[in-house]
Image (cartoon, rainbow over all chains, first blue to last red; front, side, top):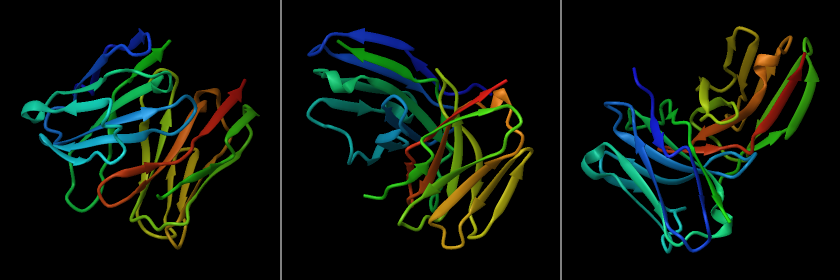
Length: 116
Length: 109
C-alpha cells in the first residue's frame, strides 16, 4: 500500500515570496491533516479536512496561509507571502476518519521550507 | 489550549541502558498515541493506549496510560542505536491530535 506522498521535499525561498506544497493521501482515507513542525518540536495542526470539507482551521494563519482539498483527495497548502518564521517542516497526514475518536494518522515525509 | 509536556527534552545514553520518557497534561484525553520520528521522515505510530491504567508492550518498549488519562510514560529496556529518534506523545482531543513537545533520544553504540 502506497503511503502519503508529498512534494517538494525541500524548498528555499526569500521572504515575501509565495510557495505551495502538495499532498496525496493514502487511498480511501477521508481525513487529511496539514501540520507545521518547527525544528525539534512536536507538530502543530494547521488544518484538518474531512473529505473536501474543513473540520478545523483554527490555527491556520489565514492572512497568509490557504489550503484546499478539491474532490476530497489531493490537497495543496499555500503560503503567500512567506515570512522568516514560516521556516519549518510541513507535514501532511491522513487517516480513515473515525466519527468519535482519532485513529492512527499516517504521515508523509514532509516538506522542509527555508525562508531567507 | 491543551498542552502535553514531555520530559526529558533530550536524552543521550549508551547502548544497553534503560530509559523512561514522560508525557504529562492537566487535561483528560480519551486516548493517547506515541509516535517515533526519524530525521527527514514523518512520525510513525508506535501504539495507542485507551484505558486508564493500561499497559502495552511492544518488544523492548512498554507504554503506560495514567489512571486518570492525563499522563503517559514510555519505557525502553536495553536501548539500541536503532531507537534513536524524536519520540512524540499525542492526545486525542475528540477529533484531532494534540502533540507533545517531544523527546529527542540519542543512543550511542
